[in-house]
Image (cartoon, rainbow over all chains, first blue to last red; front, side):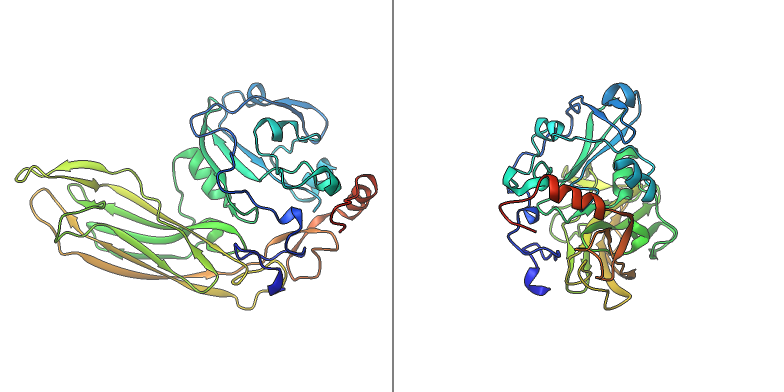
Length: 72
Length: 279
């Protein structure tokens, strides 16, 4: 599988050049910066209940993770 | 689907569904190299993490060039709490003396190394009252604090992350130096690239040695001790990584998920098949 290794040194069971192996280009924006308040959002949770981020968070600190897939 | 995934994978935190990637787009992190012709793959973000304080303000964020590089949960917690807890299960080595206590350990994952997951070599100084060590640059003849980490091929070592220094002006000369005192944590991010631990093959060994070299010079307001160099060896266990339980990932000797994504994978292929690069 060494032929599948990308320029960062990582393997994957998908050939190089497939769009899902694409990485963040240099200089691409990455959203809110340190010091910014996270923009509010409303999204359903796993039960379908709508979560209003800042309201539901109330006074808690938070860790917000953007991930790619729960399936693949 | 997320409910079943969360239950089968024992996920205690909230999973949200951004079906049309509206939040991903509003944050500006849509992976625009994946296009609608890529079917169900379209809409994914460049993965990353934001840690906020009680007011919802970002105190730390983690985005990397490669989607395979992710930060340890312990690092996220340290960013949220402002405190680094030393894991008793992790490899640890101690040095120094009663006035300058030195601890070297691996922060994150109890010190194990898995493909792409960032850990930190933590070097903690506990300096007796009145003593300080130096940040660069220092005048000729003095030694700034330096931590270097060496590991096997495939271990990626990044630049040390240093805490803020405080200025100290020397009475005699009026020169101002940058110093640390009290408890000083120096963190060196490290992670395993696939040469060391890969998701497409079983591990070829159980652990690797990581050498940590610490150079420093401690002084009080009158005298300086001789510069010191201390070396520590930490044995880091290698571990396989977590992969989804679908055919493309199975059979490579990794830790396969409890959630069987195959039915959902098949549904995705039927409803939104990729036309540009068929799987």
